[in-house]
Length: 154
Image (cartoon, rainbow, N blue to C red; front, side, top):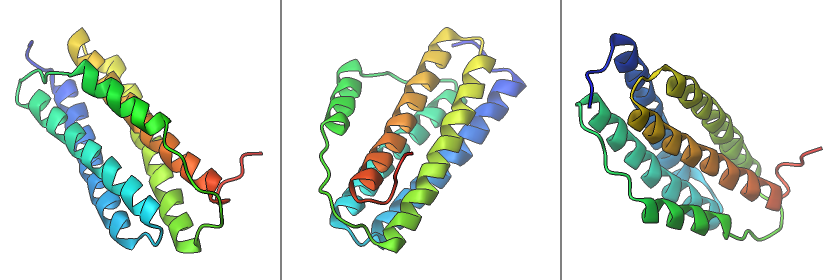
């Protein structure tokens, strides 16, 4: 792997901070959520965020992380098949979902910017993979909110 430029290192440091915030929020929110299904959703996403942090740390240390294609497809498939029960979600759960959805939108956007700034196509691909998973996290929260009557797209 080529040496990172100062700008690339700075972008990865930013992503490291973002991933740390996501992990903290998802773990905190898993403990605060009232709905067991939402607790599980937050816990699952927290584990993937930890994988993202590990990947960013590897990139910062000059290592190219191994990307397991089968694992990626399996995670995408299981999230896509997730079903949610309908009903009315609690106000506090709604606030947690609103905040984490806003966080995911922000983090996905920062990955988008970072992807365009890296010279190494392998790093760009790695960051793109993480960004796709961030979008999947946002989608899973959106679907939960919609199914619980907490989000009504107009």
